[in-house]
Image (cartoon, rainbow, N blue to C red; front, side, top):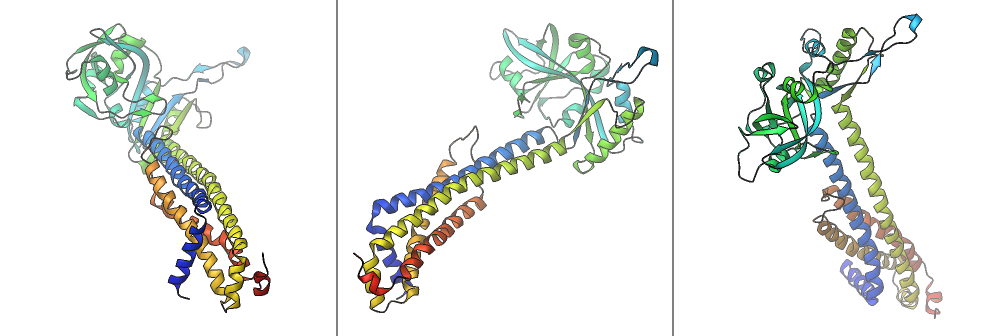
Length: 407
């Protein structure tokens, strides 16, 4: 018997009970589609997290004050002194001799205010900093210009606004540049509009207004001994860890303490990205494992239908073996039937997965990875072979006389 004959007989066997075969195909299809879509959802989530972290810059460090430290006179018990991030720290960290791997240091003062312009209002985060802040935080200016060192030194009330602030304050088609807006009760002149970055975690990176920290102190926060944070940019992503060590050493020296007792926390964006990527990868693997359970259920369905088929066609098997059909032919025939069912399920599952990727799931469109299609399809065929072998072997092992006597 040729391979073509075997395939034709197997197709007729599958078509004998169309409804039963269709339900089995459906089980495999759901498993394959689930694997493709859930891996796609996990991949989309992973890329979204990476994009959000990358938008913050992968070669930046954020230095935050953790509060107070130190000890006073013994007679007064344990005392503390404020752990302030000051201009002296900025100057020390910008020293090429002490921190050769640091490219720039941007002091940050942040406050939330309501921005208004001719009756329109929008709540925004005002960040007071220096010109290097835009580059460190990976902002780009879409129109106008950023703040300058001269404007910082002159305490100029100028501001660069995010795209969300511009769209909410100004009518469509109007030019915000040169216009005066209110930030709280203070007036600031718009000198630039930032290109859109989108959301970053819970924060909207476009709902910002960036001004010289000197004017923010003058008009919004009042003079403070400490900045909210420092954004330290390393010379490259590969030197971020060296830059972190240098920052720790400089700050420890400036504040007369040790690195272990440093009253500041330093967030390393590269480490954050690595941890987030590993977590996302684990999530994707978990989703794929959950979807694989559906394929397992589909495989059990294939075994079930083949066992029923063998039982129903016992006399046919007996006749074929009585006229000389070898065991290998019977085994191949029923194994091909199982593979055909799985093949149909795999093909329809891939199609459903591709169609499903066009719809938003959990806030994002699944990103279909070619490997997930090949993996799901390959596993579907393997399921057909694995779960079809036992019924096929059972059919091939029947003794002709017992098969012929079967009612």
